[in-house]
Length: 151
Image 1 (spheres, rainbow, N blue to C red):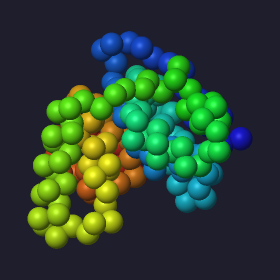
Image 2: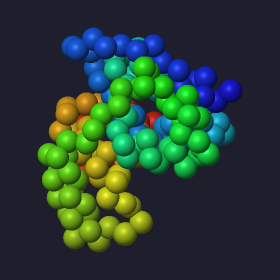
Image 3: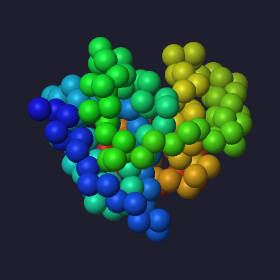
Image 4: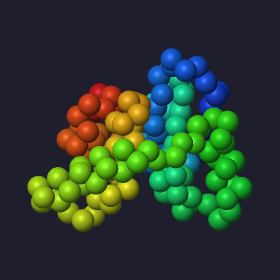
């Protein structure tokens, strides 16, 4: 079952690496994406072994579209495995500024503000970010430590 690949052993060590997990990685695993599931599963396991895994309400909401009931979603993303954090207000400010820069530079409206919020959350909290979308995050959040397929 795809959700079995998301199981993580909680690591609450305060000085451990903390990784915010982007929606695309979780969906790759849950949908058993033929191109990305293996990479995403391996990268998630390595992040888990290195420390804490975090999701926020945006990631939770984006993953929820694959489920009919909240109980199913909570089973796929157990709170004991994925620490659930609120979004810091500082991240909201940084996300807004990054999104405004993106739009000013001619970015299409197809990239939602929510994606910038995920990057800003990781940047403000000094978390690593596990994602397949490295180029946007490198451009708008250059201080982030990223785990992507191209690094």
